[in-house]
Amino acid sequence: MKKTLFLSLAVMAMAAMLSSCAVNLGGVTANYYRMNNYYVNNHLSNGTHKLVIHNQHDFESVFGEGAVMGRNGQPTRVDFSRQFVVALILPETNRQTSVEVALVRRLGDRLYFSYIIEQGHATSYTMRPYTAIVVDRMEPSDVVFQQVTRQDLENAGIQYTGPSIVRPPL
Image (cartoon, rainbow, N blue to C red; front, side):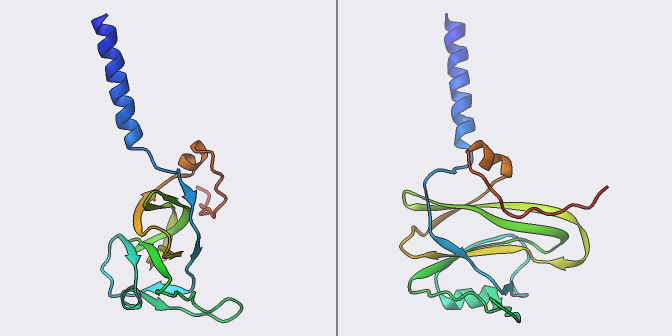
């Protein structure tokens, strides 16, 4: 009897520990749009940066405008009186790397920014992979960054159809 009770308690404790490490994919979908046509300034230290930017000065210290010709070539505009930017910037790499927004959810007073990182083959150049979104200020500004996998999303019943890195044949 004692052995069964102890084993049951041990299993419940292990389940509680594992569930607390799980990725949070609950909550309500938050309104956002992706920031386009910017580059990461060279003076930003190499390494991973998880940023929540609330003003133009801080924004310009991280990003530069990278307008291109053609339709939708202008950089995304941000009205910092009504919006803020959430950005994930990775270290320089010579590997083809994709950083994609998988899910942005609001739960209580937190905004959960879920992203997928995929790496492909080596290239002859280096890049600074990043993704950034613009969120309405009425959304919570306590942001939790969480890397997820396609499997995490599938397990939560969420279909993700974002881009995938094409890997060269072996």
